[in-house]
Amino acid sequence: MKPITDMENPNSLFSVSAAQVKELWSRTYNREGKPDWSHIFPYYHDEIVFKDSIQEIRGITAFKALCTRLTGRCRQLQMNIPSLMKEHDSIFMQWEMTMIFKRFPRSTIYGATKLTLHENGQIIGQRDYYDIWGDIFDNIPLVNKPYRWFMKKYFG
Image (cartoon, rainbow, N blue to C red; front, side, top):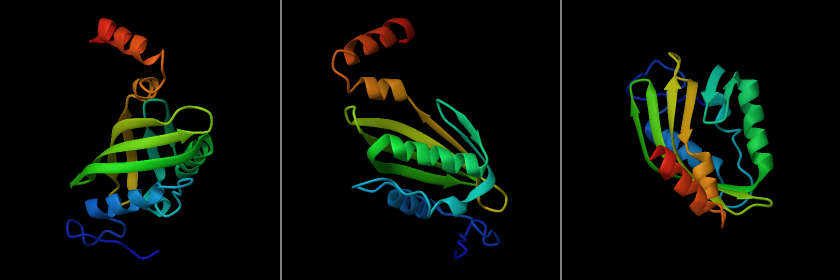
Protein backbone atom coordinates (compact mmCIF):
# COMPACT_ATOMS: atom_id res chain seq x y z
CA MET A 1 0.00 0.00 0.00
CA LYS A 2 1.26 3.45 -0.88
CA PRO A 3 1.43 5.79 2.16
CA ILE A 4 -0.99 8.71 2.11
CA THR A 5 -0.22 12.02 3.78
CA ASP A 6 -1.88 15.40 3.78
CA MET A 7 -0.90 18.98 4.55
CA GLU A 8 -2.44 18.91 8.05
CA ASN A 9 -0.17 16.13 9.28
CA PRO A 10 2.66 15.45 6.80
CA ASN A 11 4.44 13.03 9.19
CA SER A 12 1.44 10.71 9.46
CA LEU A 13 1.59 7.50 7.46
CA PHE A 14 -2.15 7.16 6.84
CA SER A 15 -3.61 10.65 7.33
CA VAL A 16 -6.39 10.88 4.76
CA SER A 17 -7.88 14.07 3.40
CA ALA A 18 -11.61 14.67 3.04
CA ALA A 19 -11.33 14.31 -0.75
CA GLN A 20 -9.58 10.94 -0.39
CA VAL A 21 -12.28 9.66 1.99
CA LYS A 22 -15.02 10.69 -0.45
CA GLU A 23 -13.21 8.98 -3.33
CA LEU A 24 -12.51 5.80 -1.32
CA TRP A 25 -16.08 5.49 0.01
CA SER A 26 -17.53 6.19 -3.44
CA ARG A 27 -15.60 3.19 -4.81
CA THR A 28 -16.88 0.99 -1.98
CA TYR A 29 -20.50 1.03 -3.07
CA ASN A 30 -20.87 0.01 -6.69
CA ARG A 31 -23.71 1.18 -8.88
CA GLU A 32 -24.24 -2.49 -9.79
CA GLY A 33 -23.55 -5.50 -7.61
CA LYS A 34 -22.16 -6.07 -4.14
CA PRO A 35 -20.02 -3.53 -2.28
CA ASP A 36 -16.32 -4.10 -1.71
CA TRP A 37 -14.63 -2.64 1.35
CA SER A 38 -11.23 -4.31 0.88
CA HIS A 39 -9.53 -1.14 -0.39
CA ILE A 40 -10.49 0.86 2.74
CA PHE A 41 -9.63 -1.73 5.42
CA PRO A 42 -5.92 -0.67 5.50
CA TYR A 43 -7.06 2.80 6.61
CA TYR A 44 -8.71 1.34 9.73
CA HIS A 45 -6.77 0.84 12.97
CA ASP A 46 -6.64 -2.72 14.37
CA GLU A 47 -8.53 -1.45 17.45
CA ILE A 48 -11.34 0.27 15.51
CA VAL A 49 -14.52 0.95 17.50
CA PHE A 50 -17.59 1.10 15.26
CA LYS A 51 -20.97 2.12 16.64
CA ASP A 52 -24.34 2.74 15.04
CA SER A 53 -28.04 2.63 15.98
CA ILE A 54 -27.96 -1.16 16.28
CA GLN A 55 -24.56 -2.29 17.55
CA GLU A 56 -21.07 -1.59 18.79
CA ILE A 57 -18.19 -3.50 17.20
CA ARG A 58 -14.59 -3.57 18.50
CA GLY A 59 -11.56 -4.60 16.47
CA ILE A 60 -10.78 -4.90 12.79
CA THR A 61 -11.77 -8.58 12.60
CA ALA A 62 -15.26 -7.88 13.97
CA PHE A 63 -15.55 -4.81 11.71
CA LYS A 64 -14.70 -6.86 8.61
CA ALA A 65 -17.29 -9.47 9.68
CA LEU A 66 -19.92 -6.70 10.00
CA CYS A 67 -19.17 -5.55 6.44
CA THR A 68 -19.48 -9.15 5.20
CA ARG A 69 -22.89 -9.55 6.90
CA LEU A 70 -24.19 -6.33 5.33
CA THR A 71 -23.02 -7.48 1.91
CA GLY A 72 -24.82 -10.80 2.36
CA ARG A 73 -28.16 -9.15 3.18
CA CYS A 74 -28.38 -7.05 0.03
CA ARG A 75 -28.39 -7.65 -3.68
CA GLN A 76 -26.92 -4.20 -4.14
CA LEU A 77 -25.89 -1.11 -2.17
CA GLN A 78 -25.48 2.40 -3.53
CA MET A 79 -23.91 5.34 -1.68
CA ASN A 80 -24.15 9.05 -2.33
CA ILE A 81 -22.05 11.47 -0.24
CA PRO A 82 -23.47 15.01 -0.68
CA SER A 83 -21.16 16.62 1.89
CA LEU A 84 -17.95 15.83 3.73
CA MET A 85 -15.50 17.82 5.83
CA LYS A 86 -12.35 17.23 7.87
CA GLU A 87 -11.40 19.15 10.98
CA HIS A 88 -8.35 18.16 13.05
CA ASP A 89 -8.69 14.44 13.83
CA SER A 90 -12.34 14.11 12.74
CA ILE A 91 -14.00 13.58 9.38
CA PHE A 92 -17.76 14.12 9.07
CA MET A 93 -19.82 12.97 6.11
CA GLN A 94 -23.49 13.09 5.22
CA TRP A 95 -24.66 10.14 3.16
CA GLU A 96 -27.59 8.48 1.41
CA MET A 97 -27.35 4.69 1.21
CA THR A 98 -29.80 2.80 -0.99
CA MET A 99 -30.12 -0.83 0.01
CA ILE A 100 -31.64 -3.21 -2.53
CA PHE A 101 -32.69 -6.27 -0.57
CA LYS A 102 -33.31 -9.77 -1.87
CA ARG A 103 -36.97 -9.93 -0.75
CA PHE A 104 -37.94 -6.46 0.49
CA PRO A 105 -38.48 -3.10 -1.21
CA ARG A 106 -35.55 -0.84 -2.02
CA SER A 107 -34.84 1.44 0.95
CA THR A 108 -32.80 4.61 1.11
CA ILE A 109 -31.35 5.41 4.51
CA TYR A 110 -30.17 8.95 5.21
CA GLY A 111 -27.39 9.39 7.72
CA ALA A 112 -24.11 10.86 8.83
CA THR A 113 -20.79 9.41 9.93
CA LYS A 114 -18.06 10.73 12.18
CA LEU A 115 -14.64 9.15 11.63
CA THR A 116 -12.08 9.72 14.37
CA LEU A 117 -8.42 9.42 13.41
CA HIS A 118 -5.75 7.83 15.60
CA GLU A 119 -2.49 9.74 16.10
CA ASN A 120 -1.00 7.61 13.29
CA GLY A 121 -3.79 8.81 10.98
CA GLN A 122 -5.74 5.55 10.76
CA ILE A 123 -9.46 5.46 11.56
CA ILE A 124 -9.80 4.45 15.22
CA GLY A 125 -13.49 5.31 15.61
CA GLN A 126 -16.53 5.33 13.37
CA ARG A 127 -19.93 6.47 14.62
CA ASP A 128 -22.84 6.22 12.18
CA TYR A 129 -26.05 8.18 12.88
CA TYR A 130 -29.32 7.28 11.13
CA ASP A 131 -32.98 6.39 11.66
CA ILE A 132 -33.04 2.87 10.25
CA TRP A 133 -36.65 2.03 11.12
CA GLY A 134 -38.09 5.31 9.90
CA ASP A 135 -36.26 5.17 6.60
CA ILE A 136 -37.15 1.51 6.01
CA PHE A 137 -40.79 1.83 7.15
CA ASP A 138 -41.26 4.85 4.85
CA ASN A 139 -40.91 2.43 1.92
CA ILE A 140 -43.44 -0.16 3.12
CA PRO A 141 -47.09 0.50 2.20
CA LEU A 142 -49.58 0.18 5.08
CA VAL A 143 -46.75 0.58 7.62
CA ASN A 144 -45.32 3.98 6.67
CA LYS A 145 -48.26 6.21 7.66
CA PRO A 146 -49.06 4.51 11.00
CA TYR A 147 -45.37 4.53 11.95
CA ARG A 148 -44.99 8.27 11.20
CA TRP A 149 -48.28 9.01 13.04
CA PHE A 150 -47.01 7.10 16.10
CA MET A 151 -43.62 8.88 16.07
CA LYS A 152 -45.23 12.31 15.73
CA LYS A 153 -47.86 11.64 18.42
CA TYR A 154 -45.43 10.28 21.04
CA PHE A 155 -42.10 11.88 20.16
CA GLY A 156 -42.86 14.91 17.97
